[in-house]
Image 1 (spheres, rainbow, N blue to C red):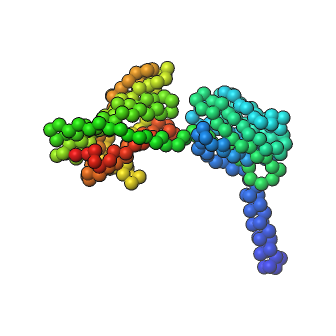
Image 2: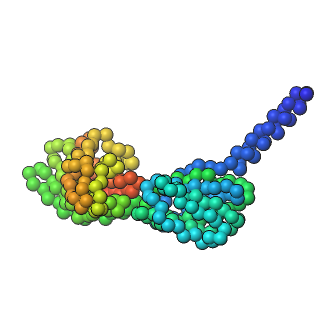
Image 3: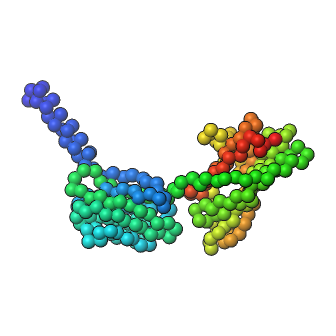
Length: 253
């Protein structure tokens, strides 16, 4: 075979590989909330798995049931979808804590999903802070009358921000209540301070307990060493749910 023949064969092989890759299934992760309808791509003759990371599916409602086979995989958090026709529809999956919405598209060719990891991540809560400020002996206490609910499990409330004129330390005191009927480990709970989207270097979260019994309330404190007397943001997270509010410069001594 001449050198031109080898080059031609190589180009044909590369083209075939590109075609195979273009029509291969994908594994991807989507983050959703109660206001999103995420698209799922199916292909005739293929099964697609929806894998719920933080929730267990209980029930599904699909627009065109005659054109889709939907199954729960026992012992897992997976739901499988098998198209029986190229009909678009919508799908709602009711889980233990949340309801997930999807728009389903099916084709005979083109891209499709092999596995979709589904994570619940609602938008950040916007908190309007009302503060009562008390200054005694070079110590300022800021009481914030706000309450946060994280992942329908923890209530965070009774915020007090304390700063000192002659010290760099700032203390954020608050209380955490377990609103569920089961014990909660605090491994997935976190609070930290940032400025300009960068985590402040010197800070520490102290919890009264690392396990909270049902309906129990514990105390917590975030200790921050501020190199500069500037405002900062307090960030709260529990698994995939997040919230935050700003402590402005004028509230610090």
